[in-house]
Image 1: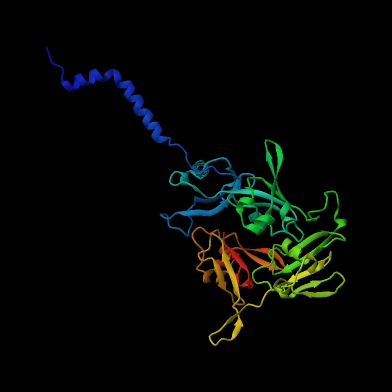
Image 2 (image 1 turned 90 degrees about the vertical axis):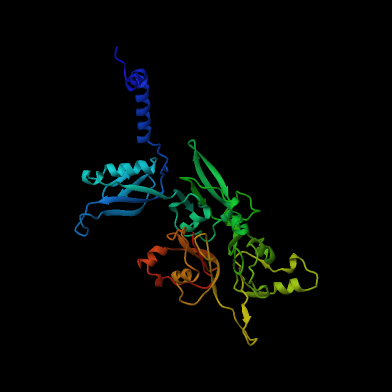
Length: 410
């Protein structure tokens, strides 16, 4: 009787387990071919970096590749526009799925040898801002940004805006909800926890200041007057008072956030509604040992204008003589390499100022830099595109800085 070789015997014994082994091998192969898509899901407003292979032209050798490489923003309806493929709906898909979508839309000879690539640069969303702002409308801002960001995008608030009563309208389960945002308090305290988070499709409304705190809600603007205060105060602007009541200079100064560090309280100027002018020495009153009360401060009536001048800043030179202190600007924001005061010279441009401060860091959003400037006692935010200035698309020489400007680099 012939003996069965040991290897053949092993095969015959293992034969019943063969279907199970094959199933396991096929399952493992399928799992390897279909990895889980863990890429980011794209929403309206997101900023993407898209790379798409293009047809080789005469500028390229047959071995070189021609690519479309651009930053692309998803519009408010979830579409992107690509010159070679037109409008494509991508909201709700992952970056891997979008890459495959764009690859499938390529000509066959390109898709066989190369593929499109989509990467997320920044999560953004669309927010609408309405009311008493320079440019109301829809704006695309980073998801991490707060209300002050969209306010600056809209050109800032107009004269008479009530930043203490800003509201956010949000649709939840088909029902509109209103959220209160006190930007005025945030500007006084600098506490970001005061500002509510914004989400996609929120509507921010900046109302007009129509009444003082002690006015009842049913009284109209006909029962109020306006007082203007500007100069070296923390919150210059227009403040309403009840007609015939007015306020006093101390209370008005407190309402405006108090004086700044360089305020000259010895020569506060008051221009009355009838054209009369007064100078009040508040510093002298505080320095005096004589008894005083709120009645010691001048009454301020509707139509009056108050200016708190700034002290002439001086310093001593090497010989002991007093000379004017150098003018400065401020560089700030997470995208700046060196924050703080920087020397200012007339004719300086933002590009020169940023370079003087060490430039921008790797994470700076150079498309959304803005300059904060005081104009007639009111804050004004001026947009500045660093990238376009470098490319001379918006010549830097056309933008002249002024002393005390603040350059914010997000």
